[in-house]
Amino acid sequence: MRHARTPRFSCQAVCFLCLSLILHSPLALEAGAAGAQKVRLAIPTVAVMYAPITLGLQQAIFSNEALDLEIVTMRTDLAIAALGSGEIDYLAHGGAALRAAAQGFPLKLVFALDHKSPFWLVARPSIASLEMLKGKKIGVSFPGDTPQLVLKRFLRRQGLDPDREVFYVAGQFSPTALQSLMNGVLDGAVLAPPFNVLAEDKGLRILAFLGAAVPDATTSNGIVTSDRKIKSQPEQVRRMVRASLKSLLAFKQKREAAVELLSAQFDIPRKTAGRVYSDALEILTPDAEISREKVRNILDMMQDTGQKTPAALEPEAVLDFSFLREARRELKRSRH
Image (cartoon, rainbow, N blue to C red):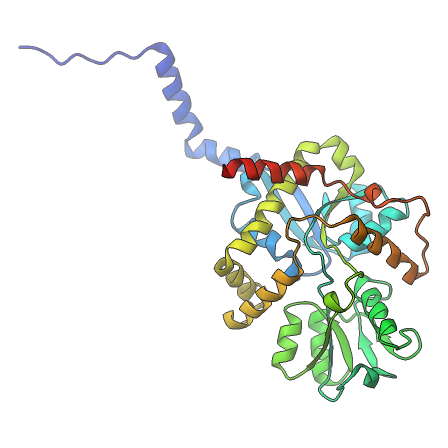
């Protein structure tokens, strides 16, 4: 009677098998997840322009880059200080951060989310024209912030004196401003999506899309970090930018997932979220980069706050798109 021969394995094969079992065990996977690098990103408010990052977080794009991303809401001036102290790693309010960089803060914009101002000027139904805003109250986030700067530039070009012919009510971020318009506390307000769409649904009047009306008043929300971070942890910055790029592309390519996210995030019907998604596509950059001219426009807006841009400062001094361009090349190679 013949016996089946027991297969023999080489020592190397046995070692490989054991190593494979260890690496794919639940304990190893948990350890790998726990080994993700903790990073904190500050945003000034929950808004549509940051939705691609949120989608990337939901779809594990950041964790696939070994990043444990935490998004925190923080006022921009506080976020800039926190970035300097190391309390946060990145902030997403590009325009304000670039103006801070022009004043000597060692910051760089490494990834641009939008290339048009994501603001709509909305008024009560009785305000049928811009002329009727004279002497009226307009809600803004706070004095000197980007929405007010964009609005002032728009009003000035429409023939209104933005410093004398209208009154500003601070502390009116989009959700609060919408309620204030509905209650008659405000006559007009600067709203970001989805609140411009919700305002229109409630019968309020859209006077202008400021992103189109004032194309040189760019906001450039995006990923900003410190020079220290770029020098000391370039690999983390590389992964952060790569994950952000993948998230932006996913938001544009996966409409259903993006609409579902917007619907859940802002507690709005899917049909409304679909309209908000269309507005988002109008605002977002095509390739996560903005031109030198747009950065120059952002810096020039400092004059609207009474600040002066250093004469010798070039836009390149506040930009570092090297990580972004590398990520785009990697993605292009991976498709071929």
